[in-house]
Image (cartoon, rainbow, N blue to C red; front, side, top):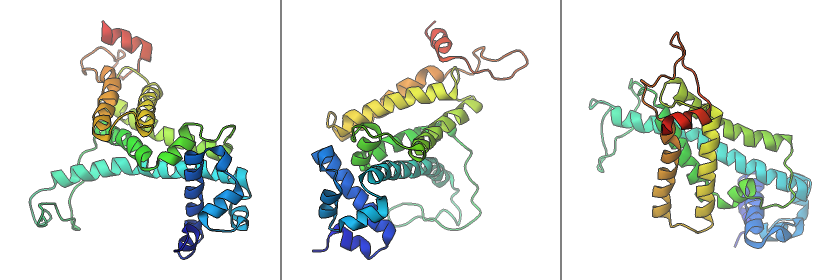
Length: 262
């Protein structure tokens, strides 16, 4: 039976690199940091230690690569979420004309044609991004633990790794800002609201991947949690949050909470 390394070799160096990283991450999470040696990873992946030194320069470079790989996968999933949300709206909004054909199961068949894109819905895209956060944690729990749960004690990410993490968080800030700009959320800055959402969803998925909640229950409670975080900022548009002259003003979070509770 071919090893992970032998199978990956047939597909190219990028696949070899990914196979080694996946092996290292799994060893780290299942057996602990002591298992994260070049020799042990090479043995588990079915390659020589020379391959690992060539690709990563040793253990420290491999650990940094684990972080970067995890955030690269995370970022791809987060970036795809709003596009998928727009695609869903496009599908449901498509007119029943020659472009609205369906297959035998009732699903719409995608065809080329002059269908117009649905109106932007930043709030739906924000929710899709939050759902994608959980989807990633469940699909890649080993990488999630490396990225967010300190699976490698003493690891200090370098500038490139830190930039990768910040880039992912900025996607959430951008999604919140789009809602603020359209008046769908009010009463806080984009970064304040994004911080609160991140704190909530991180706690929820960390508990779930640790085994505290079963999937159906966890999915419902996860959405209820981020809905509860968003609720104070879903303020009616007629509240006096505008400066004289009609320009929108973002309120500090503490002030918005006081006004919402009063």
